[in-house]
Length: 601
Image (cartoon, rainbow, N blue to C red; front, side, top):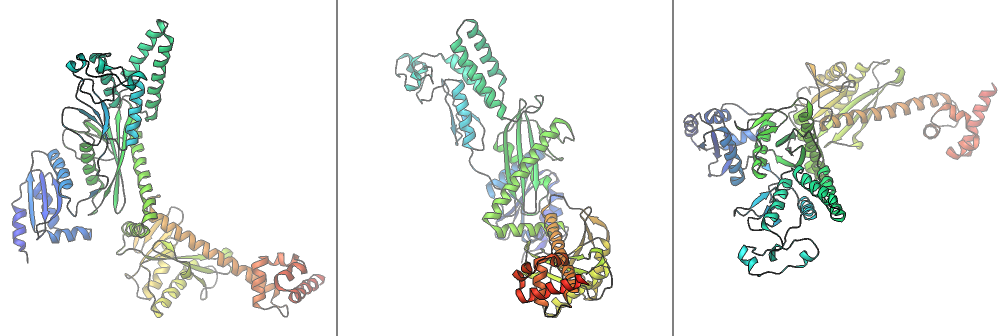
């Protein structure tokens, strides 16, 4: 047994400085890494309360040893936390799902620099641009560069002595016009490096200088009557303009800014990043973060920003985000409310939402059980339930113009309709159109029967209606002694308000939330099922009152006629042949003679 006094002593001796703390279990395994402005306050908060999530409470029970690293500032704490999480991979820290090797574009440090794609960064003084999220993007950029500038692709050592000694000979690339032949001294180093400088600007997202250079050359060639060469330069300008137009253009004044947004649910968060340079979006990337301890969006976004800035080597001094985050004193945080910056933030949020939808669709196909579990966990959280609502029942009353009152109960299991468990109720104890009394009756009958037959009870009951309907249902729940054993809520149609027992203030869910969609599906299904039964009952009653006195016509024949003709009027207008096609010649003759006699009278 671990001595709790030892743990208290470790907490009490922590400094009040910024830093990173690490939790270890009794076997010395790393459990969790976190950062703090004040180490003592942050670590103490884990031990002086019961946490909302079971996972956090389990984590706290396992902690035996606390280690810490003091750093000069919170910015250093953010960076160190990120590095330690990636290195140590603690069990209770979030998972950054797309941690893989991305391609870069390299401008090699050498005479007559080569430009090529690579997944490995070699610290030899070469320049690396990226990383890019796919080789498709890299290849597109390389094709653009190849169209604009004739650069060498060979790996010769083109130092001055090798060129002067005639060590190399031009290859096919020179003869087809893709290279100017620096290996034989046909192109000067100065001219070649000017092209490399222009490419460097393009990779940074600045197309203006290259465009200006090409236009100036084109104008000079045209003025000197070199129209064929001028046309080739014009084609290069069009290639450059076409490539630039593929990037979403934003306000040209917005430059060298990074945009981050987050969309989250019960189990994961999705962070989108847009890089803005010279008025264009030059990079977009979305990452998924697996939650472990129900971390808040602020904490997850901070972690993601530090990770993405490190991974993509971002140097911008301003970031646009949906809410305030703490990234240290050297980065300006902008939370736009309107204007161009707000529009670009909305675009980022939209990208994060679309990415989440794609991931959920894939999950639903690949692992439907996990998809169901995620929805159930989300519903439990959104509706403040003690357990996941794996079994839900929804009630709806139907009495059009006060006739033939009926009620419907539909059942969802694991978020999907269980039609074999649907039930209809004909109202027995209520006279006239009294929805409240009808609800009391059907709820009592439903759960009295389940209790008597020892059948499983639902985790959640949904009543289609507001406070009045909910109160009526609660009478039966109380009478059966089920208060507190089954969660029950009412949903009002107009504003999709959710009412809880004893709470006058309704709950409003996000109109796009999956929880609300499941509840709406339940409510709509209950309404459809109830209306269908109500119509059948009315048709049967109307038809029954008309033909019950016809000798030789029984209940089965009546039901057959109901299903086929739908109404008495249509039955009366039907010919004997049409009726005989449904129920046979002899019975059709009796019905036809009955209506003929009725009409004659």
